[in-house]
Each structure stands twice: as C-alpha cells, then as structure tokens.
Image 1 (spheres, rainbow, N blue to C red):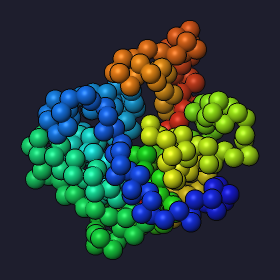
Image 2 (cartoon, one colour):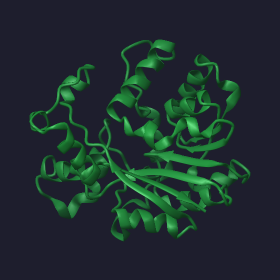
Image 3 (cartoon, rainbow, N blue to C red):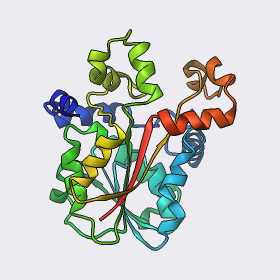
Image 4 (cartoon, rainbow, N blue to C red):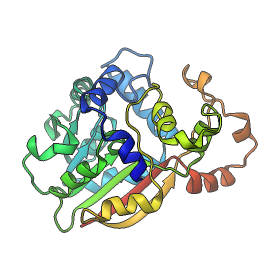
Length: 281
C-alpha cells in the first residue's frame, strides 16, 4: 500500500474534481432525458441490477429515523434510497456537477426535505461540516479515488461516536478485475499495476487516482483511525460484454456463460472487485 500512496499523493485534488465533473459516475445508466423520473428510475434499476450487493450492504431500511452521512454521493442513487427508507441524510461530494444532478434527483422523488447536500472535500470534511454524531457513515466506491484516503478516514472518525456504524467499499487489489486489467490491457506489466488500475478502473478511462487494497490493508486503514472492523466481504465480478452493455443490453462474456451461477457467486466472494467493510467505534 505504501507504494500506491507514494504514487498518487501528489495528484492535485482539482484534477480529481475535474475528472468526476466531466462524467459523474453512472450518468450514462439511462438514455432518457437527464433529470426526469424515468431517467432516475433507469439509473437505479441498472445500478442495482448489475450490483445487487449494494442494497444488501447498505441495508437502506435499517436506517429509518436515523442520521446518515454519505461521503461521495455522486448523482444520488443511494442517497435517495436512504431518504426513501426514512433516513435523514447529509450527502457530500467533491463534484459540483454530481451534486447538481443529485439535487434534481431528490426533488423528483420528493425527498429533498430529508437530504442536505454539501460540496466538500472528504479529506478536509470538518472544514465544510461541523463535526456532529451520525448513526451511519456510508461511502461506497469513493475514498479510493482521493489522493489521501487516510485523511478521509480520519475525518470520518470525527463524526463517529459509540454506536456509529461505518460502511465503506474500496477496490480489491486481489480481484478478477485487477488481473484482467494487468494481463489484458497491461500486457502483463505487473510492475505498473497501480497506474494501470487507476487508468482503467472506471467506465471513463484516465481516472487520476484509484487505490486498491488487500483485505488486510483495508482493515488496517480503518483500525488505524479507531474503527473496529466487524465485517469484510468481497463482492462483484462484472460479467457482461462492454459493447452490448453500453447499448443497455446484458450479454455475458463467453467465459461467464459456461460458469454455473453457484460457481460464479463463489468466485465473486473470493476475487470480486468490491471490498465491503463494516466497522464500528
């Protein structure tokens, strides 16, 4: 993990912000008019179809009447799921464009009164939001894209009290996705793994920062800042052919067509791309 930190820590945060402003995560999950109910329904259906472990991990219904802090809300799909389940949500993001769409999403679904959106840098969150206790701190696929993830975790700790739950997803270093990137596009250049993974980790190539973690390294990251990890699961192998997927068709790659569903799930739990950790103070 040290080598990865040395590689990405010099990246200016403005470069990260500009990348996500240019194409917010999941913005192309629907061909319908951006900002309409039909658009947001498509995005949610597609997101949870491809990543069905997200509702299981987030446990949206569990937070009815509770206070949720979401670090990196993107265009607001999970945010609205929490709010619809009855939570009071504070959602932060670095990308102005993502927040603009997320606010539209909250209005369309009629839950704007339950969500407070704040543009903030997760590494310096307490400068934009005064520390206050939350029941859940949730960050799915976000902190591995900031130059100093350890700073973001340290900031999260300021909003946690005894009884607070932390749920974080980071990318799994020992995953099928990393193997495919390095062996395929990287032509076996394992010595350049961090840069290859960063450039090819997202739908839009050239992501300036993408860390990946072993189970042990991810646990240590949280524990170092006072969180006690109580759950660690590996999930998600993307099985579809990209060309058809970009046209909203779901055709499995040939190698995944011949694998029985129980074996596919077994593989996901061992070499999946998403490392999902649950922790408490």
